Length: 285
Image 1 (spheres, rainbow, N blue to C red):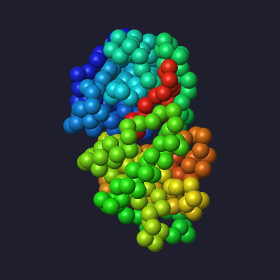
Image 2: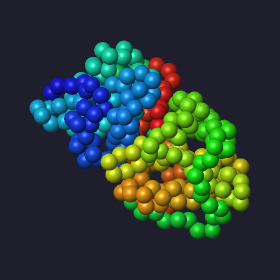
Image 3: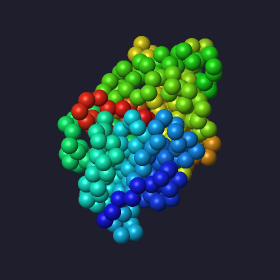
Image 4: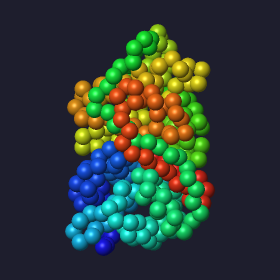
């Protein structure tokens, strides 16, 4: 068994793409990020890291990182791959802020990583190939407009404070710039009358799917069905646009989000966790 570092996202996907695609929903984060990095290798500033573990000629695990963010793990078909990944990551980076990926591999990785580790965010991966629009929700969806900038940045700040207190990503303005610049990413809003009441983003294109999120409704506007209606229409738009699947992550600590998306056609696929090492982690999605 051996680990091979890959020079760039193209080489990484050439080597590990079939392995990752065989479980596309579980690997939608790593597929979406590496796909974007093929054309924009410095999207997150520093040179990205890619590695693949092989048993003979068979891929048994894969990993990537866009510093300063977390290491991202794939599913692994042999736990010995985790020792090789941990050793190489230690050689390259020294320390890490955290690791994110499928529940069991990241928990095992956290146990062998030399820094103190604690669980950060526990999530569930959902997938939809058809959608059921909720009834009796007032309003309609429209695309992001330039005049929405301040509102969306403020809502994204509020989302981070509420949902990602241990794992703040890039600042909200930079996040917005990146989403709007992406060829396959975007933002939509739900309006009730003329008032924006909820927003949702999408991006992370995979060979057959695309990831939805984050989704945010201000607390005073919740329990009116806005987020459900918005994600349903957004999902329909993306499926009608040629995607076979839409994916999204939910926080397992939020039972509301885990129920509303199932009601509009999303099915649970697997769990994905983030572990934080020695302090605060950073999550790019």
